[in-house]
Image (cartoon, rainbow, N blue to C red):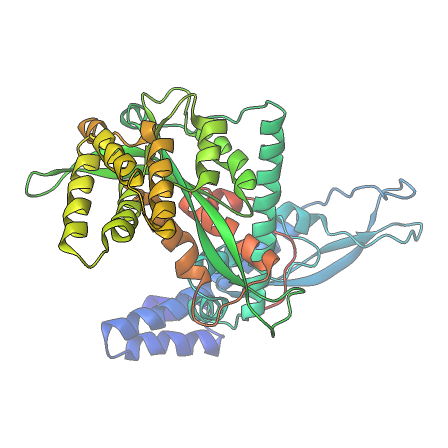
Length: 457
């Protein structure tokens, strides 16, 4: 501590008070937190010293966009930006047209630093704020960011950063989708040899999200819209402590859209190409019986993927049929359901279909019961090629769509369906695409480019 007192800002009482607070801290946590405040101050001093040195370098002035004359320096002007460690200030040369053209003044040094003319917060602060907002409400993210940086950050600032970053992700996605529609395939994502040799499984489902009334007003009746979510992953094997081998998802990638199945199709196919669907040793499509999802499979994936109907969804249909036919309160209904479930699970669906066909031939069957059994028979017959569960288990493939349901819970429900939450479509889409960027491993790359100017915290 003595060397710090001797070498750091002898004439700066604020720094000396911070150093004294470190010495006087009673516990380890208190020492660390006090030292962190010193580190913030020292970082600001270091950054400002580096900027001051660089600002003295010769400036290469651009030409006026109106008359073409070389801009000239009008002297030094102060600039301030809020960083992860607090406010950073520096002075740099600014220039204007010598002929008086009505063009804004320019600061080449700011451009070299990647700082926009009206930017109030630095990129790393925006990045951390967006990362926090991916998981927690904006107000909570702003509070946590304020604790970390030692300043005050408003929820509106975090919201603005999310809108800017999310808009950038959406625009990039639209460019990729347009290129795909023109036949320009994206580069496949690099895979380790063991992942490239593993089966690729795809699935999709929908989840409802609460939105504000038409026009985005805060009051009025809540509107519910469905968000389609797709999952792509490689199937890996994991041995537990007891020696049991279980299947685990690896290289999980998510796609989602606030829209119908036609909006989901190109997103699923874009990610499937990125995940090397053409070279995967085995490709599996796994979902419940929603017609739209299987239309996606038929139009995009049937040529390269095996389709599996979610076993547990099929079992729900079986119970509805048993309850309608034999009265769900009776032992006979439970016994038939158990028998049918066992047959279905062990690769004998024809016996179940034969039983249903025989039941439909009985005279005097109530109309409601006949309708239920007819729907069940048509459902199983339509998916006859997708319910050979004994074969799927023998191949080590999953038969339940839990991976999609868990993705819907994490991606949508945990962040967008909190108590009292209602979203505008723009606000939802921007944050949704940031969450997708996070889980898909592209979040850090997003912030390698400078964001647009955002609200002052």
